[in-house]
Length: 427
Image (cartoon, rainbow, N blue to C red; front, side, top):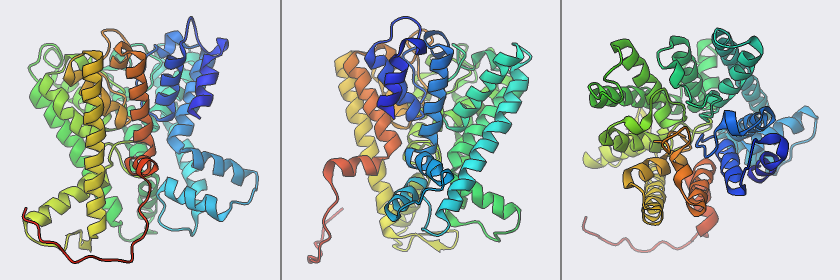
C-alpha cells in the first residue's frame, strides 16, 4: 500500500512542482500508518487529486489492509477462507472466530456513520469561511483524518486558525477519541446502551478509564506548565487555555492536529509529552503507541509486585502473568527502539536531542505532532534522506505493532518440552 501510494503521489497530476522519491515515500508512509508527519505542505504541494489519494491511503491505513480487503471480498460474496479469518481476527483484535464477518460489516457501518456525522458538522462550520464546495471537501478530509487519528490537514497552519472555535475543538477531538477507543469497545458500548449487554468487559473498562485519566492528566500538565508562558498559553483567555489544553491533550496520544505552535512549548512539557505519545490509543482502533491496555496492565503488575502479591487482578477479574509480562516486554522494546533511533538521529543530523526525541516518539506512536521545521512542515523536513528513512521505518514499526515487527526480526521461539530447575537470583 505504501509503495502504491508513493507511485500514485509521484505522478504529475498528484503534486505541484518537484516531488522527490523519498518525500513521496515519506508522505505515503505517514498516510498509510495514519501518522500525520509531513515533509511537504499538503494543501500547497499536492493537487486536489493528490489530496484524494492521501485521504484514501489514510482510510485504508486506519481500517487496516486485511479489514478493507476482506470487506470488499464479502461485498462481492466471495468465500473467506479459514486462514484469512485468522489473520482478520488478529487484525481486528477480535476475541474468537464466531460472528467475525458480521462484526466486520458492523465496523464498516460504524466507521462511515461516525465519519459522515463528523463531515456534516465540520462542513457546516467551514461553510462560514469558504464556498460550500470547498467546505464539503474540507469537512470530508478532516473527518476521515481525525477519526483515523492521522492528523493530516488541508490548512497550512493545521488547525491554528480555529484555536478558539468551540465546534472544531470539540468535533475533531471526539472523532479522534472514537477512532482511538477501538471497534470492540465502540460496539460493546452500543450494545450496553441498548441493554443487550448487562456488564461492560474488563477490557472496555480499562480502555475507558485509562483514556479518561490520560486525557485529564495531559490537560493538567499543559495548563500547569504553560499557563504563564507568554509564547504559548500566556496571552490566551481562560476559556481558550482550557480549550487548547483539551485539544492538545487528546492529540498528544493519538493524532497530529495542533492549534498552537508546538515549538513554543517549554522543554519540560515537550519531554513529558513523549510519555503520552508512547502510550497512544487502544487495541483494535486507528491509533498507535504501546496501547492503553499495555500501559494499564503494566501499572497493575507493578502495584501487585510492590505489595508482594502474585495474584494480580482488577475489577474483580484476575490478570494472567503472561499478559502482564507481555506489557512489560512491549514497553521495554518500544523504549529501546525509540532511544536507539533518537541517539542515532541526533548524532547523524546534529540537531537538538529533545526535538529529535519528540519527533521519534511521534513517528513510532503514529501521532504526527511535531515541533516543526520553522515553517509549516514537520521537524523531519530538516533531516537528511537517511534520517527521513529512519522516521519512515519508525512509522511502519509503530503501525504494524511492536510485537509483530520484532517477531519478524527475531522469529518465534519453538515450543520447548523441557523445564529447567528454577534458579535463585537476588534482585
